[in-house]
Length: 209
Image 1: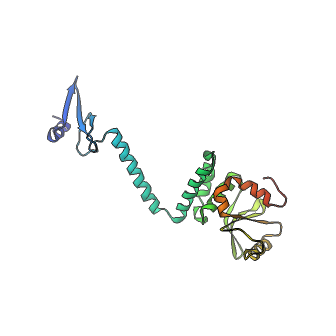
Image 2: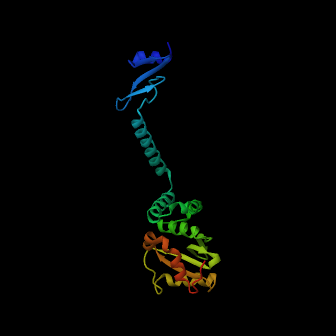
Image 3: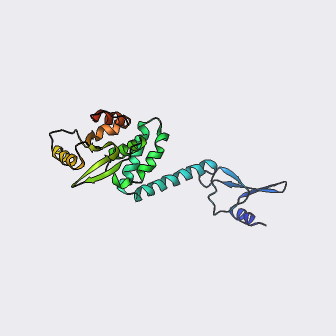
C-alpha cells in the first residue's frame, strides 16, 4: 500500500483503479468539488481550478499590500503617476523605456506631476537633470542642451509674484540665454501629452527639438 493509499484510507478519500492507474477523488478544501489526483497528501492545498485561481489572486493581492507598505513615499508617488499616465495615453507601451529610466531617480521627484513631466521629457528624447541645484535654489528640471528650466507649480505663476525674484537670480546665475518655463501641476496631471507643444510655445525662438 502506497503512502497516498494510507492517507486516503485514513481520510475516507475514494480511490479508483483502472488499467493500472490509480485516481484519488479528493474534495476541494474550499468548495467541496471533487478533484481527480494521481496522488493524495492531506498536507497539500487540494483545491479545484477555480478555488486555486481565487487563492492565487488573494496571495497576489496580499503580496501587493505588503509591497506597498514597504515602499517609500517617493516610490508610492512614482507608482501613482504611472497609473495616471496609463489612463491618459493610448500608446502606454511606448512609455515603458522612459518609465524605467525615470524610475532610477525616484527619490528626486516630489509629486505626481513631477514624475509625469520626467517620464514625458525622457520619452521625447530630452536629457534632463531633476532637482538641479543652482546656487541657493533648486529647480525641478534642467535641460542643459536646450538651456531650459522647467518648474512644476502648485498654482498659476505670476511674473510679478514672489517667485519672480527667484527666477531672476537663477537666470543671472545660469545666463540670460536660459529660459524658465512654469507649468501648473493641475494642467500637467490632465494634459501631459501636450508638454512638447507647451515647451515650444514657451520658448521665444520656438525651436523644434
